[in-house]
Image 1 (cartoon, rainbow, N blue to C red):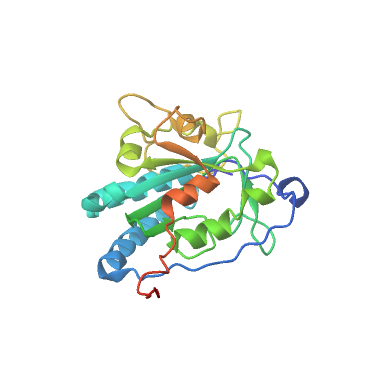
Image 2: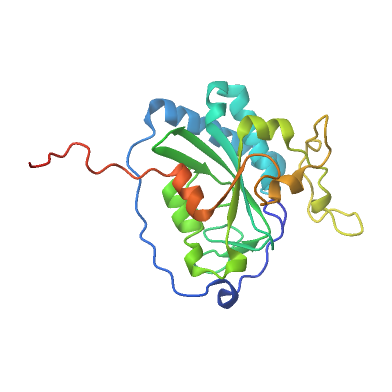
Length: 245
């Protein structure tokens, strides 16, 4: 399946190595007027992307969302990221996906891409065009329900995350859409209506973004634990409380 690479039929026995238990903790705070306006902008970008692409080509969909922010909210672009999810075997299980099966909507992608807005240390929003969760979703809820825990998975299914600043993604990402074609050259599904995204330096850099080797490719690579630590700051429950001497 395009966009998130190719989907594979999930098998719970080869994905889940032991039972998992996760508490779905909520995040504090509201969007605020400026945040709401920004979200509305990205939602409009999502609607435009879906009209042109359907839901195919998640790497291009996210590129288009970055482009939308640059055009309409340039001051926010430095707080936005494209996030690729994959691993060495290119077998990453994600839950709550529209392409998933069963009540939990589990699917195994070779890679997946989503957009992230991190306007402050304790607030991060995820915009995923392929999730069954709301658009957007608070980072902690998205990660908890979509990735759950690597502790519950066999090692070959552990997820890694390449996080690329939106400005860099716009400048360096390119794709000739070769992965959207069959071996005979025909399209697996109709491609997006606009021309392929190209740069002066490259016609196809997609594999550099999917690669999860640290030190190779743009941005920074994290495992699940360090990805969460980087973008989720738990509320300080000591604020506003008094201590007794």
